[in-house]
Length: 133
Image (cartoon, rainbow, N blue to C red; front, side):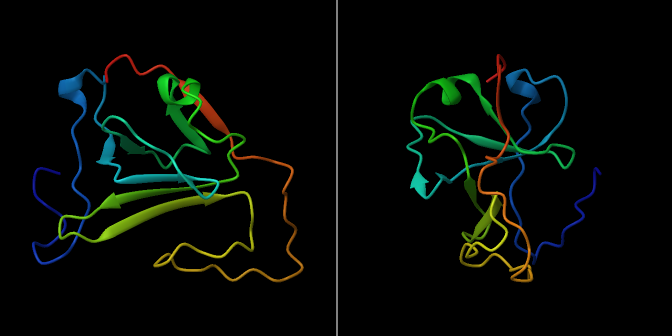
């Protein structure tokens, strides 16, 4: 929309337009503040963005990050922290575990104790070429 849909008094994530960098389409992308995988902080030596795509299952990461050896694999849980316009932190979280303790500030989803957990299956993590970044 050419008109902001979020009121100026609301806090929000600042979107980044990646088209000037060469991406072929407009995406919902935000700067990543911190990336935590399997409880380990992933040291990022360059700017990192999260492209939020509701049609994607799992995580897609650049081939450079995937092949760097700093990403703990297999990925069992991940938290992507992004700074809001007012200095807050928004967190996207994924896990193979249903009864995990949530990240602070992330609402919980009640699961019955009888719910199955699939510890043997990691999150689907796919390396993708990112020639435009």
